[in-house]
Length: 184
Image 1: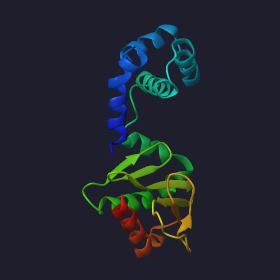
Image 2: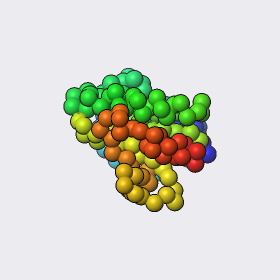
Image 3: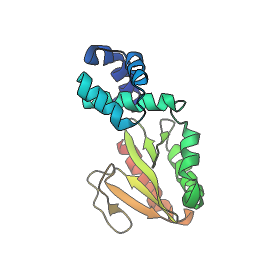
Image 4: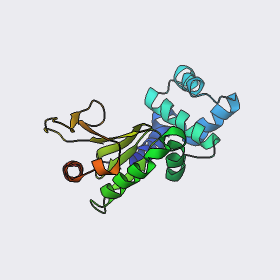
């Protein structure tokens, strides 16, 4: 299974064949129109040029990232994530990230705008600061029944454990994290 970065590279490589223009040509067109908003770029690409939604969305995101000086670095994403009320949860977040990294050399921590993705060959969990006093550890544990602290969770992960301090990130939770890692 390819990583999101590899999928993006493949999409950019195939763009001229699939859309009729290279990424750089699309960037030049968007710039010539003076568009900046995601919606207006999508409307231009899909409506006037017949670009599929997937390619239009990718072009718009990449154009806007370039216009803003490039994609945010992991440290910039993390700093923005822990600004304000969520700052108090940064030590717990870091504690969980360290434990995940200790599971194996193949663990990738990928900060996103609203969570930290825990990946191996594929994603096996997320760390999400849900409030100023709670971190949700999302885990992918297929076939494991929800029980007690291990709650069923809709979305990217099958289960969630609500944590408010490092003491709650105990052996039981670490075992669930290790199990999710092992299944990825």
